[in-house]
Length: 478
Image (tube, rainbow, N blue to C red):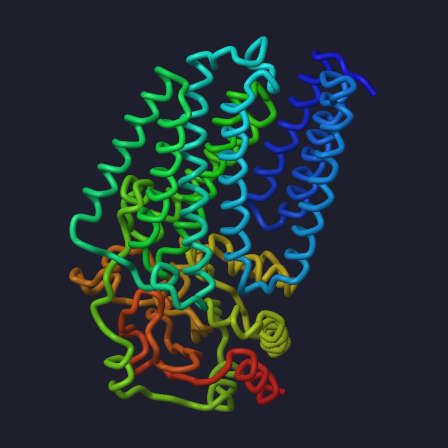
């Protein structure tokens, strides 16, 4: 099987069109399945084109190279399929962080291979010829961004997993005096060694530059707390794309350039949207300098009295309502309660209640986490509303049901200018006539803040596992 270079370019362009259509489809739940199909189709075209190109360019040696490629596809694809099949929805953010780390590591490995054997990639005519200055710049950028992406994603994975005792992997921010100055010095040092590598193509500055980038990735993520993890995920997604694009330039692979640019730019746009939703500075996010200290403790939260009720009490309020707005949060994901919530909504609808779902952009631990959960339960898309669309309706809602959400419904963002989340856009559930909040306990959310919504006269707390509580409410309505 051989291909002309014109046909290769055409097929790569076709794959790029499919990738663009995939991003367009993934922008809305109703078209997300189609978007996935577009993305998979584009990747199949790109992979087969690359395989054919290896055979054409490599000749006899290409057969051996093709064997390695196919082995990598089988091993990597098998591991990926195994992990994706076993991962729980609550662990999806960790899987995404892991995938980002692999993209960054791949970019670094390719860069090392290019510096070691540039003639094998067709960059130079013969072994021993120096790397062209333009390629050195591309390798410098790709290596630095890839190394930062890898080490930063490893730290993000540990923070999201929340099961490692090592302090760097714990959800609380890790800060020390002069941290930002140290980051700046390391960044400038990496640039200096990168310029040295550009001037000499020597191994020493390249390896030092790469090591500094690995360290910088760690230092950029450790000061970020659990509350900011959705922004971290989207930021690292952008970094992984730019790393791939940078390596694509050095490989002169148009497909890699296009795909990496699409991922990098879309990730940057998503990061900007997340920053607006969390009242963060976009520049600070890019530089890793955000994440607020907790101003209260969970122990202090537990000392304040609240009005609590039973699932039967909640069922009475819901069955006598005309309009109910359900706000899903991470607690719903932990309890795997999305199917139970759908059954509750169906039961209420049968009783003539108008049910809607309100989604905050950063609810959960990754962008779109709640949308994915509701889609898995096949909740009708026309019942699911984004924050800006649903907020005006809370004032007319009879009941707002908060399921495992905390910071995204905290009125302090609007009422307390000294709050660490002051100015953060929230779901205005506090405006509903009655509020039902389901939580396991009075423990604080990711931001570590007390939530005044829980202490309002209109609020009733129903403690317990979200799935069990929702199932009991549904039975009581029957």
